[in-house]
Picture 1 (cartoon, helix red, strand yellow):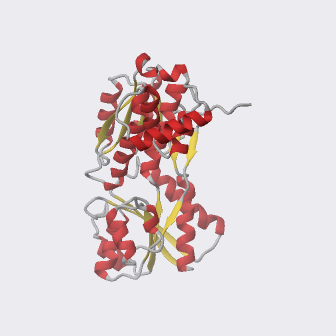
Picture 2 (picture 1 turned 90 degrees about the horizontal axis):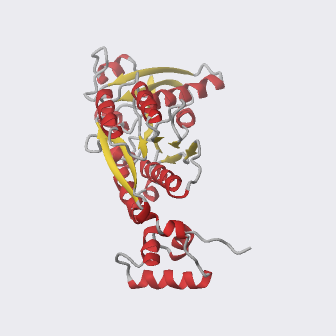
Picture 3 (picture 1 turned 60 degrees about the vertical axis):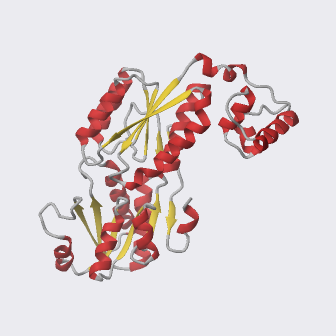
Length: 348
């Protein structure tokens, strides 16, 4: 049987984007001579015949996919999502897909709710959201279901009905991996699980990581470790107003720290300033984390790859709207373990 080539296949063969292939096929927009030559040659070799449905998509329907995620100027973890949106638009805009960004304050459930309601009122075809707050996300999901709006999540999984799918890591498993790393580094001692700058009661992503972390030691059934959980706000104060320095001075046996957010650098800066003997495992390749990883104040980072999460999430929704492709219940990304020796290969 003759292989049916897709625009994606041709793009990969030519080493260009799907949007570039589409512009050549429909003779619109600017394309470099070299790219056009490569694509034309491949089209001749495979005797490609465009799908008449896809060919006329732009004239028939403009699909709106809205992405709801936290403000990146307050938390640099979300900056790569902007690159993902740009890349997605380059690949899908010419096929009739339009994206819109809605941003909320990551420390405010009310900001999330209000922004989501504003988004939903525009009646998009689909929503991709990073839901940091469980209860509010449930309300948003129900409203979308009532309005027949497709909704998917990335970065944080909420295992309830109403969501089409989840794109990201197995958060429970990433917590277990962090536990294994600290166990290997320490052998015994007192480990502090630290949640930084989040509303822990609502932030299910941190709760799942903590549960995974603790489950590792429960399964090991060892008495070699004591594990404590502490919550810090953005000013590095505990809920009981003890300072970070005072806490560690009162718990001098703490020799390991698991930070459940991208703010790992805040604990590493404390370690550097006060010369504390701590092994630290945390999350994400934000600039401050990378600097302290290189300097040896962070031992390991788990890379959650927000850019890939956002791009895959948007692409999955677009492929469903354009070509009626099934939306899988979950798309789990690899759990990358980063140290001072291999971080460079993960940076673009």
